[in-house]
Length: 346
Image (tube, rainbow, N blue to C red; front, side, top):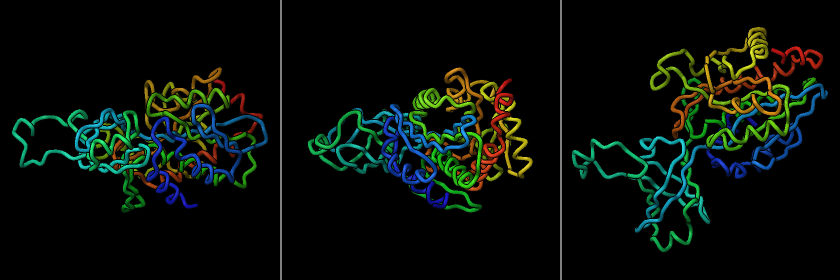
């Protein structure tokens, strides 16, 4: 399967935090050629590709997406809701999917500007001021939807110039595609370390799946693959990370210095483009909990730069995804079992 096709199918599907299993059948179908697929008690999907058994390396990208939940059913088919990780301004005029007894389409509207008072125009958009219109009567809706049911954004997939793609849930389905690219690169490679590809659960609600997966696998090295902000318009004001310039290797206390230096050396040796970012504290990613799993894990964070994070038009460059997968594969290929202990010591 082509990387772009896999990304499209993953991103247009729905798998909010705690319901990642909605995607498991498809992900299992795609990854099963590389190794044994299992699911742990917290919904982490784990693919074990055997090496020579001389150590373990875990590559992790979270499968869950930002979401909303129904809080109340109102008259005339309207739903009140709470959001997680979503800026209310981005919800206006969006189509959503309500995951009730059956999937229902809804829209989030707003009062037309012609009918707004000056006071209305000055008010910030809040979740409390928005409702989802389903078109059902309250009585019919109560048969299909209950408070606590999940709501996700209905996405649209667009291919842009320069091999860029815009779609919802690039955070972090692009990371899952990078894992897939790495697995393809390793298909015919004899590597010393056993490789565990993990599609983690509940990252968006507290980096939770990373804890159980790391403790269950007990890897020597753990790599979190997530997204980061670009530094263009509407991005970070400081820094120089850009779409199309390669994966972003993090530096900071969450990151193992010797393994990071080896990764940079390999990128230079194989002419793999990369960028660098510095994080002085928590990276806010699965890497934070990977590092303190078990007795401690030598941890890396490799990020894919994107635009418009946590919106329905997240934008990513396909070459960045490919190069992140490639740099991880070359790292795995070059780590020798007899050198592992020295590598992961500080």
